[in-house]
Image 1 (cartoon, one colour):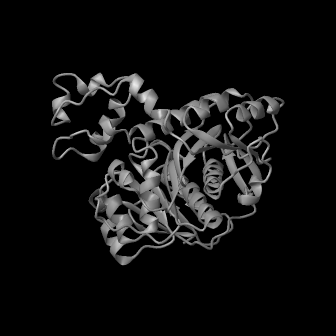
Image 2: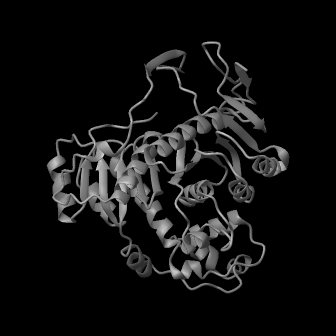
Image 3: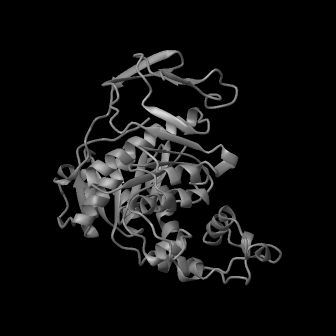
Length: 392
């Protein structure tokens, strides 16, 4: 099949819409269920590249959760801890495959943003992954294959209309890529830059103790950034993105946005949050939204009389600003990556407040000395990669 008609473009008024191969060859994808749209395929192709590269770079099954052509989260398939199972709403006794763990962690980065996501898997989608997806609000999935049981589970979603796309894992895109904007065609070489451990050899900080786990986290952050709308910054811990700041015009705003998301991810592990007693039958999105508001400055929206009864069996105690600050201060071992250089040391100052101990960024600012000095002040390991990763 050389082309596929879509329902419409980015918006309902943008018709007709389709995807097709300019060289006349067959599309490298097969729609097994549903009818994906224009944005669905933008998410699908960007997310597939991310997880494919992440698997190649780490050797671990990888997954991503995409919204509007940027990852809400990405992760490799490390086993879930007991705390992970609690904050990602996974049954304590559920048997999970590595690829299921990868997707659960990827979606767990920012569950609020992952509402209605596009899922991407580096490996065959199995029943464990499909069963978890069945309970989440999601628009579609792309993977190299599906087990028969997984496919049957996914076909039950969205009244049978859930989008399931199978991609040829051996597909290689053309060396040159074209893009039309305002009737004008842009051309550039496909970004084939390979991200691996060799990119992390230029450690410019006094502290040069880059652990193997931190190196993997740097790779996760950089590959995630390669497919995130620029400007972008990504915080990672234990093989999982925990905060992605995308599409900001200012670098420090990226760092703050991603850092705030990383803080929210960690706050969900606070004992007061884990102890929230939700009413029976509350839906997952409502539970996610409630937690997000509870840990924010607008907590009264879910705790005032007449509102808390709609969500909780017992009115929770307020998680105070002092308690949140003290809890966030206990976060450690976090890595941050940036798709372009940090122009000022203020980015390092903000990052370290979210437990950052490792930083990977291109370097090349006229103020690199200030950035290095700030990293040294906090004994942070700072690697200059020499490679910008803008994505638009």
